[in-house]
Length: 208
Image 1 (cartoon, helix red, strand yellow):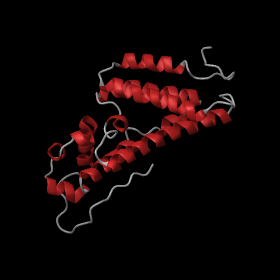
Image 2 (tube, helix red, strand yellow):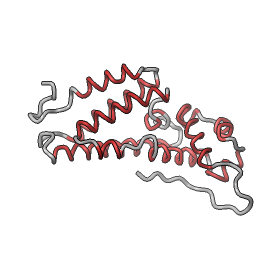
Image 3 (cartoon, helix red, strand yellow):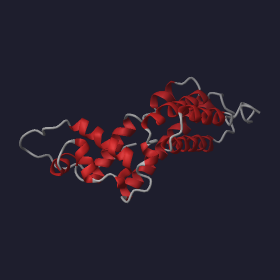
């Protein structure tokens, strides 16, 4: 999805004496660890290695910085396109996606930024954008499941929307578990159990 943030007007003068991309990545890390409200201006400027006037000149206000960091996250670490499009089946795509979560989320120690950082933000725009990003991720999963139905992998009566929501809920729960310290092994066990719910061609669960 397209995430919009109000950019500050271009200014003349000497070029900025910092790497904007690196500063954005550092801001992303702060927001990811502390959430939108928990990340103070001093936290952000210290991590980014700039002063407040430079932050405002480069990114606008804190809200605009968060939205740009979120866009960077959605287009980078959280991008699912390759997994969903390249897996041979919808089931393989879902299992690969959840297995990736089981491997990657414990490494961050923070869960998924889309789940953890903006859900309860004081900024309505941040909350609305976070919700929209999660909905967009779910829509992508639903489309891959719908493709599986068209290709005969799943029975014609499969509720693609409900199945996508179920696996998105599993993924979000794994994010919370990872933030609480769950190990990759315990998250892989969640994946294995979740995949038992995958419907077979008869319309029943795969393991029925």
